[in-house]
Length: 81
Length: 371
Image (tube, rainbow over all chains, first blue to last red; front, top):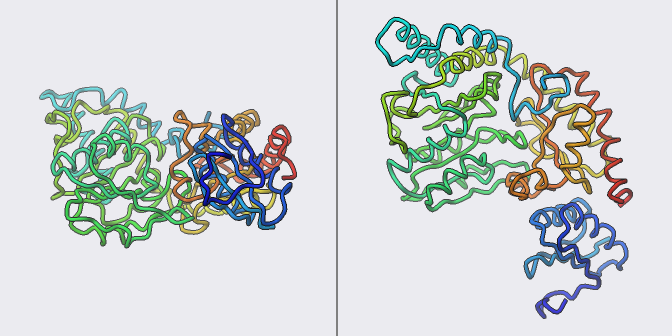
C-alpha cells in the first residue's frame, strides 16, 4: 500500500494475488468485494497478464466500478452495489 | 480424432471424402517433379496447373495470381514480407489478425499501427486510414477466434492505393471470399484438404518481391517444389467445400445459434462473445467466469470433446488471446467451439448437456461457486 500514489483512492482492502494465475485474482476480487461497504474500494495486486483484461471484464459483467490500474499490477475496484 | 466430439474445425478438419480420395489417387499419379521435361513430369505439371485453376476459380483469382505454399502461415509470412520487400514502410493491421500475420510484421521490424475493434471484435472501416508511408494494410476476413465477419470491402475502399492483405483462412470454402483484396491467403486443412498446403494469391499489379531466394516455381513466389499430391487433394477439397458451402451454412448456422442460446441459459456467469449474426457459420466462443481454460479443455477432453481456448493458461506464451484482449472481454475460462461437416445436432446436444456440469464441477473445485 505504501507504493500507491497519494492522489489515488486509498483502498479499504488489499487482496494480494501476486504469483497466482487467472482466474484466481478474479475469484479473490469476487470474494473480497462483498466484504466492504458500497462505495468502498478493493485493490487487487496481480502480476498475471490476464488480470489486466479480466478484472475490468468482471467489473463490467457485475456492474462494479473499475477504477483502473495504477501503479502497474495494482487494480482498484469500487463496490457499486 | 474425427469422431462426433471433435469440435475444433477452425484448427483443422478431417480430410473431406473428396479430398481423401483425390489424395490417394494423387499419391500414385502426381509424384513426378512438374518442372522436368519428360512424360511423367508433363502429367504432373498438367495436374498442378489444373489444381491452380480450380483454387483460383474458388477464390475469385486468376490462375497466375495463385501460388501454393507449405502452410497458411508461410503464405501469410510471404504475403507480408514480399510487400515490404518491394516497398518498406508502415503497416496498418487490425488488432485481431491471426498471430502469423502479426509475427511477420514484427519480423519485418517496420512501424505498425494496430486498428482497434469493438466489443464484438469488428473494426470500424474509417479507422483504416493509410498514411503516405503505409505500404500494407491487413484485415482478416473473419475472426478465427470469435467468428465475427470483418467489413473487408469497406476497408478495401478506404485503403484504395494501398495493398490490402486478406487472411481468408476461415472463410475459404465456407463463404464467398470478399472482394477488394490485393493479397489473399488461405490454408487447406481448414476447408477439409490436407495439412501442408497454404495458398498465396497476389493480385496482378500488386508490388511484391520475393523475400526468399526465388526460383522458377510457383510464379517465383514460393521457392521449392510444392507437395503435388497434397496440392491436388487440397484443390479437390476446396471445390467440394464450395459445392456444399451453402447447405453447410444453412445446417451449421442454427447449431451455432443453439449453442449461443443454450450456453447462455444453462451455464451461469458465462459471456458468449463475437457477433451473434454477422459471423462465420460454424464457430462460437464463450468464456466461463472463475474457471481456468486449461482445466476446462482437459475436463471436456475427458468427456470426449475436443475444443480450443484463447485463455492464457492454454497458450505457450502464457499470454491471453490478443483477440479477446482487443475486444475487452473475459479471457479466462474461454472455449472456442467450431463445427464441421461431420458434426450433427445430436453431437451439439451432447456437448450442451455435459458443459453445465463440467463448469459447475470446476467452480466447486476452485471454491468459486456462488460468487
